[in-house]
Image: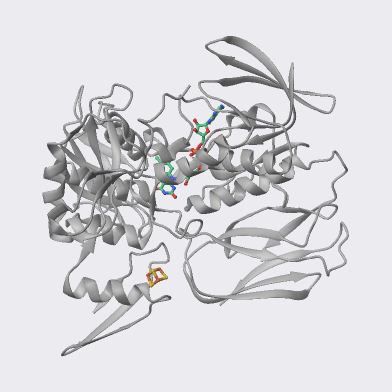
Length: 120
Length: 415
Ligand SMILES: Cc1cc2nc3c(=O)[nH]c(=O)nc-3n(C[C@H](O)[C@H](O)[C@H](O)COP(=O)(O)OP(=O)(O)OC[C@H]3O[C@@H](n4cnc5c(N)ncnc54)[C@H](O)[C@@H]3O)c2cc1C
Ligand code: SF4
């Protein structure tokens, strides 16, 4: 089975062979490639980046991301959850807007501090 | 008139890095940005993957650039936004710049100027499509601005032309926000974006990629109603009988970026045919004394980490610039290179830590990158893969060579 590692821009081409319980991975330039390939074969995960609506005029939306990976099949559930969310508090970059989504241990955090100060 | 050692034009990651680096060298620095906020295009690049080299973290575009803005805010660099440069004139010892903003017109003096004006996207005018000119044909960057900055959806069902990274990223983004992306059509037989983006933006969401395909017609009066796509042969001619009409309300173009160099044009700065940015030496000084260039204005980088690095090179050198005579020699390449930056070396400037950025002209496996001076090999580096979309950089030390104006520095790629 061939995969492309998406962890970094190198995009290493991985070859995965499964022999019962054993998964061997070749082609990775670093150990993250193996971790990625094993997850991909067992429980694929992704980080999600998107925006949430705000009540603030200067920033109709604020960029956010998950601070870790969630199961791939939960991506659209997360989008739906965030669709109904409107931010009405000025928060800092890195501050969480939702904690422990789907019990994954992952938070959704703001990736811009543009609500914190009026820039001139 | 206020006087500065370094005036930086453009407040994206390149300009900010240049300003911070110049300030570190004790220069008095002024930074000019035409938009309301610093940060450049990264303000709208909300996806992650930035900063893996610089910060060893997977950051979104705003996070990456805001870290640099924080660094900038800790310096005494004067930064202005919503300000345009309307004129630049060469004067004794530097340049005077005319600035226009809400407060009116003002003039400043800069001993040196750093051009960090970024790049722009190729538009519909630059790709030949027959038919009407309805609304609904726009670039991937415009779509990105609508969705990520304005929070508005520009389409319900679209076709993407071109497989550049921004188009791939937007295919995923629009799908997540509920639009239908019918497919990505690429005229070349290979995708132009990074493989990881093909995987995580298209495969993950079952968005088809049609290679050797293009859009041949657009339909609709006021608003786009449909496009016609067709397959092309190796010579890029349309294969008759493969035409297919697709109903959609938007055609999104992701057909490439070109350095933004209006300021450079106005100053008659020679540009490189291959990079479409100014020709520079290893200090990133253009062929005009005291004018430097960096970031995507110099050449289109695929990783912002390199943009920051290039900004630092330009900023540092601009800060220590002494108007002394240059002795420039060309860096020659064989035909396996798409381009190199810098294109020239000033042998009167330091030559021990030269950073060379390059792209190969096509895919190569197991290649040797070779540097020779007057026929003598002085450095080699092996690459398992070289691909045009993935820029490479190498460090070159020429301090042990005896160079003069007739020396020949040659870069070759050997399979
Ligand atoms: C739509 C788009 C999406 C991109 N997505 C990615 C991505 O996902 N990942 C990635 O690594 N790279 C991406 N890039 C490339 C990206 O441009 C670089 O990574 C990086 O932002 C380049 O930095 P820069 O400072 O050179 O240019 P920019 O970020 O473009 O900044 C240039 C700044 O100069 C200002 N400016 C221009 N002309 C003038 C003037 N005359 N006077 C005053 N100010 C001026 C502009 O307003 C802007 O703020 C993208 C580029 C585009 C166009
Ligand atoms: S294996 Fe390591 S180096 Fe290769 S793409 Fe994955 S993370 Fe990057």
